[in-house]
Length: 481
Image 1 (cartoon, rainbow, N blue to C red):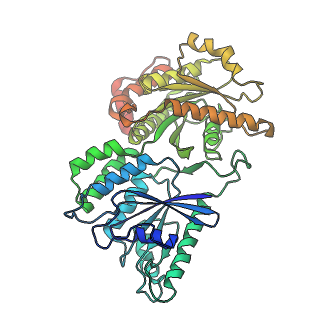
Image 2: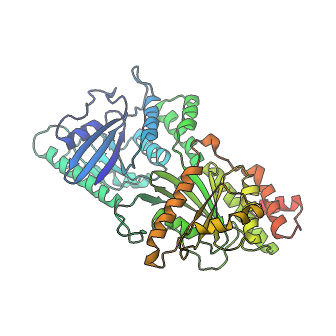
Image 3: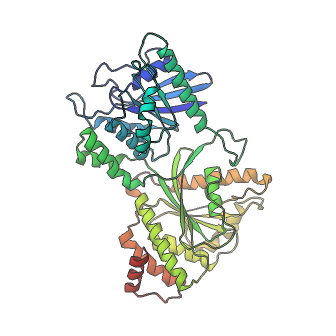
């Protein structure tokens, strides 16, 4: 099994010494002073039995500028590292050699965990330079309460020394470090009983809830680096907007009961979203999910569309409230990459056509690629045949899509296993094909500009043209949103 870990920390925190401790010899050059010796990120591999540990040593951050070191350099090198990653990262090991966690070390934790990886990757703490402690674990005993109070979350820790010292502290440190790696490695690769196929081997995705919205991470990172590392704010702002971790945002929408949540679970490889029992939910009610699957970071908005051609005025009020929440979430997430219209295999109803207009035309102004996912086709000999027989009906109904996938997302019968895997592959291909590669290409939903227009157009569809006056819609938004 392969376990990939990135070592992070301040200059002189012992990152390179940790690598050498595991490797039993000088794999990485150790810094003799505060200047640091790691000038770019370096890759090292150590075998711990059947576990292959791939370690990446990063440039250390310094609390103050020095004559030899550009204070923007650690951040720039970290950006280069994030963009160069081709394989998954299983953990971050935060190294510190101080008597407690310094403000800079705390900011490094936040920068990597929440900005670069958006809460995806777990963090373990490695406390170095404990050779002067009577019991190395005493450091954790003294600092545990403060760490918990600061809302820092570690999946494990090891208090060690990486220096050649008398006694058994070095060997004990090596054992503690290996135990920490194995514990984090096997917990991050733990299979789940809800996977699509129990025989599929190691999971190819991580599931997690969003921690900090994408746009909010800009300001957070700027504060970290300008206040604690002395970096020029304007230069940092330009760098951040070119270099943040790219996440594909997908809206999955349709009527209640068409299989939207099943599609989310299919992509995640486990039960993540509750599947509808058939009871109608509130129009535009949205659940947000995050997965990293086959190297692609996805943020999915499982959204209930219109469930009928018309609605009562009371339901319209609820829909406007949900519209506000949806548009607000999309604005904070940075925009929309792809729309997935879910429908059951069958005829194109007026409700399907209205949902197409609502999301593609009204919400996204026809600027976002849209694909249709036709569900519940497990009984078809060839699922793709449905599209061949029905494609013409889409253009006849003025529904123009950029792609399609004929799928099943139900796990009711073991006989459908191969169709499930084929369905997952087809949907992932759609997402990879139509997701964009840079934030400039993403369609950003502006809450102030689009919400009022969106609300009025919902009324046009569902209230039979009896649209509330503009002032009434504004008052409704102010009162309920």
